[in-house]
Image 1 (tube, rainbow, N blue to C red):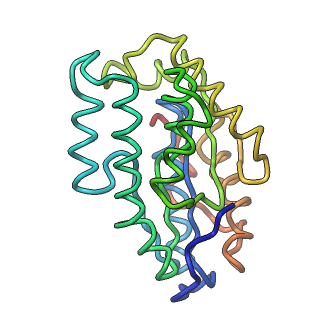
Image 2: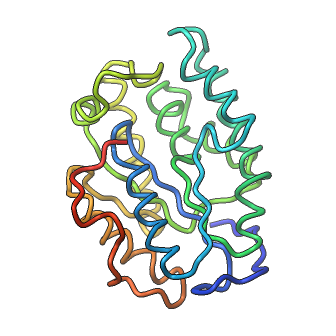
Length: 237
């Protein structure tokens, strides 16, 4: 991992900022698991910054609307990749790095793996090309941990219901390529990934995430109760 964020102000429970990304296909439950983990971390007295890509900044929300809610075919694959990389560079510079520098835990719903899986693999633009583009945009910043919630195209479509953005409307074979793109990334760097079956109950997934995150914090107890997870069913986003 390329570590470029210096350990400045500490927050109780850890001595430096920690960057955690949640990845997976549409409908995998990323937002749910990010929220549940954030509630547990805040219970430990740790500052948590929740964000997402695209849409974690004012610029990102504008780009998100253009890319995800425009007409089908309105954005070419290469333009799509460049827009996501531009959003990511701005997002890291204005939200992620400042939070890490003050010792917060940053939880992001999607990061550069999504570009590699969606544009690199599913759009067939190339794994290395898309990864290098994003790494350049973020000056090499990678998460300490990437939680990959693995979901099939069929499961994801069922979970999303009847509302779909421009990427979600792609055929199942597109989403199958996305899924394989994520799994290939995790296989390349197993120490930085936690791969979980998104079909498992929310509480079970949350416990596995918590167990993996606790050592990164230098003292938080992984066995603590996860707020909001006891009575929930499966995640949906």
